[in-house]
Amino acid sequence: MLDIDVATLSRLQFALTALYHFLFVPLTLGLSLLLAIMESVYVMTGRVVWRDATKFWGTLFGINFAMGVATGVTMEFQFGTNWAHYSYYVGDIFGVPLAIEGLMAFFLEATFVGLFFFGWKRLSKVQHLAVTWLVALGSNFSALWILVANSWMLNPVGARFNPQTMRMELTSFSEVLFNPVAQSKFVHTVSAGYVTGAMFVMSIGAYYMLRGRHVGIARRSVTVAASFGLASALSVVVLGDESGYTTGLNQKMKIAAIEAMWETEPAPASFTLFGLPDIADETTKYGVRIPWVLGLIATRSLDTPVEGIKPLVANAEQRIRDGLPAYAWLEKEGGGPTAELPAALEASISNVGYAFLLKRIRPDIENATDAQIHEAALSTIPDVPVLFWSFRIMVALGFYFIALFGAYFYLVSRRGQIQPWFRKLAMYSLPLPWVAAELGWIVAEYGRQPWIIDGVLPTFLGVSKVPASNVVFSLLGFVLFYTVLAVIDLVLIVKYVRIGPSAEHDGSIKQPVQATAN
Image 1 (spheres, rainbow, N blue to C red):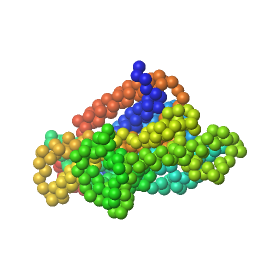
Image 2 (image 1 turned 90 degrees about the vertical axis):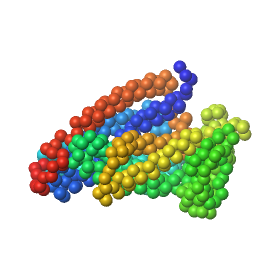
Image 3 (image 1 turned 120 degrees about the vertical axis):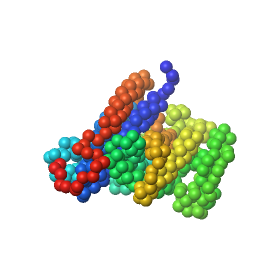
């Protein structure tokens, strides 16, 4: 067996389960809102074709929702099994939004999902429409609380370290809730989910039109998806810019790594559109740069430089040194009911997380050499090539979505003829929003390494004290279980797409508007 430590195995397991779970989250967000829009049209017009469209897309939503629940629950258990020290260290803070998500958002969503499927003949039109909107609201609320918890890991506000309990404790729930990183991350993530839902509907609708099946529902669904997708894709770009600004304020190393920028970029900082990062020479070769853009994104100004990797490493090295006195005091005095941090160490305690980075090099970190301190500082550099290319592919896909949705929306609004090749392009674009979403997750989460809580707790210190063989066993179990789920999900989606809408009619033949029974 490969000699891999528990921290690496635990990271790999959580990454695999999170990436797999995130296949279902964006589609749930996007489809739930599209269902609400389509059913709203049905209630306003009384046209049965919109009800049939809502039912059909609702079936696919239900399959996706069930898979999302099955894969999401297991992730939370990993905090107790694989990340026990992390849960102990910050559980009072991190657990609050997760608990609210489960008690409020998830139960709201899960309850009304049942009413959505079984209430068509038991509820009036308006009542069922309210249920559908509540499903969409619950989905978005669920994402909100998860992202509040996640954003605290990236920007740990509203908390302080208690030397008596040796834990981080909540000081202000409002600061955690209104964390600027959480706000930008939420709107950016849900907009990406809306793009995913719109592309899902548009691609399958294009498939039906190419084959001359269910044309009425397909045409109407694609029209809604194109307009909704265009607005969402534009939002992703605009809100992604805001996310870049908050990252520039709170995670300067991530910005430097995304840019493969080793030296500080003087104002107004330019953005590298393309290049080949060379880690050995600490340069980016063949760089194609756009003036001013990075300065505007990262600092919202044209007169503020953007720090590079080398000066940020030097800053990390200084923070490691500054944190050592507080660490030494905690080793001797911390953990007792009467432990009171001396006023002289208030500044040092804010840097004790950086001192923890030395733990991977030697246990008695108070005796670390200059070379070891420098080595620990170098560990704050994330994987530059991975971030560099993940970010650029994600951004390129974002602009592609704007062009695709925009072209389709223009043709539909002008009643232009849509060529078969364009419909094929839409159909084959189906997996691309998931690629972009997963790359965004990699940029956000992989980019904050080596921190599980930025500047507070290194990832390797958050793991449970369990044998590596245990993690290997559970990792293999997850791979097997999730592979089976993936096959089931794919089979069910393909099955119901091939069956298509099972309705009284699919809208191909016009019928008079009438009050129909639900």
